[in-house]
Every structure is written in structure tokens, then in C-alpha cells.
Length: 305
Figure 1 (cartoon, rainbow, N blue to C red):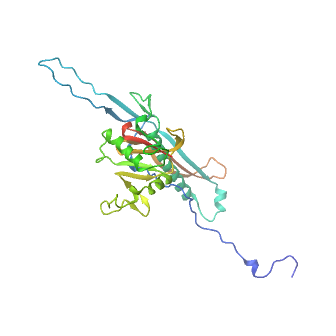
Figure 2 (cartoon, rainbow, N blue to C red):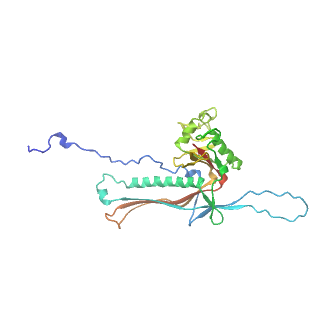
Figure 3 (tube, rainbow, N blue to C red):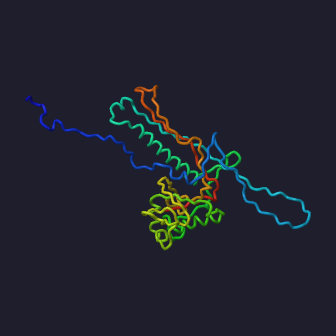
């Protein structure tokens, strides 16, 4: 046997490669879309609703007096489209060297990304600057009266507490939001959810009898408390709170007070690019949408430290 030539069983050792593709941990679906109003639009901007404000009747103080008309205050809310895309290329030469075709995973991964973008637009619309007026040129921020202090119900800054949830509900009720007819939602990160797990009033069955035969908390997850539906989202932003600290902006809202405008819902296209070297395949996913509040007093921001 010549020197340098391998022999024996080790010569036939093999390596096994996976024939499966697994997407890494991420939020896959839009979690907030079902908690807001939606509508289809075209154009550079759209008004989902024209609004009339409350009026008060006048007391009649004499006979045959001249009639003075009452003009209701009016407003117009606007939503603006934001374009999103996820273009991905798969080289034809690379495809020859693969055990599996990853194109379907490319598309699935892109759809997940666009679903998160929808939630970000909804959150930005809930707590960010909105635009109102005849042509949508007047900016409108969330009033300070709709913000729950980071120290609500405590002597120092706290996370999400029952006291803060109660204050958010009080603000909505005081504004005449019909808590019986309008679904109320609150988006929380894992941190705020954990805050609530430390609140006896939330986790104790003494305070939370079964609702329609179903416990308020199942398998350690809080879905509803005090008539508020909780949605888990790690997309919440932070900011400088009312005590000059850094806290999470937790939104609470009535479904009728939040809006997602759709110019183009999520779309996907897989095609071969004949204009590029190696004729790669392109997975192109895109969508056009935007979010806004429909009424300031239907939305509350809670500071959670």
C-alpha cells in the first residue's frame, strides 16, 4: 500500500447536513391589528372619519325670540401611507449548491417582518403625532391629561400596577367612552406582564372569579383584568417620563379610537431576475399602511418604569 493513502473504515465516515430550515425566534403575526379599526384607501393621504363634537342645548328664556343656530365643532382625522418592502435574492449558482430550496422560508420570514411593521405603525399612531384639519396640516399630540404618571398610586416610580390600570380606565370613563360596548386593550411587554404577576389583585381568584367559566389567568398568562384585554408586544418604545426617568410607554385604548389604514395589504412575489448576473430568484414582499388615533380621549398612555 502506498504511503499517504487513507485506508480502513474511517475513510467512509460521513457528515450529515440538515434538510430543514427553522426561523429564529421572532414575533410572527400582527398582534394589534385585530384590536383597531381598519379601512382601505387610495391616494397620498386619507381621512378615515369626519367628526362632530358635543353640543349643549340652550334654555328657552322667552316667547317668540329669534332663533340662534348652534354649530357643532367639527374635525377631520388623517392617516398617511408608509411604504415597506423586504427584497431578498437567491443566486441561481448558490441554489445548485444547496440541499434544500429556502425560497419559501425567505417569503415567510419577510411576512413576519411586515406584520411587525404593521404593529409599529399602530403604536406610532396611538401615541405619536397625528394630523387633523381640513387638509391634514395641523398636528395633534396626545394631551398630557391622557397620560398616567409613572408615580401613580405610589411615592416613587413604579412599573405597571393595578393603580395605573384603574387610572387609565377612569380617564376613559370620564371621557364618556362606553366601557361596556367598546373593547378596551392594553399592550404590554414581558416586563409589564411580570409587574402584574406581582399584583395580588390580578392573580388572586378572590378578586378575579371565573368569567364565563374561564379563569382570568391561564398557565401564568394574564389576558384580561378590570375589563381590559392585554396584548403582549415587545415593540413598545421608551421615553423620558414625567419624573425625568426612562420608562416604557404603555398604550391603553378603546378599539373605536385606533385606526389602521391599508393602501396595500401584505403582498408577495417570487420571480426570476433576468436583468442580473446568474439570473437570481427574487422574493419581494411589500405593503403600504399607516396608523392613527381617531380620538385623543379614547387613548391613554401609561408610564411604566
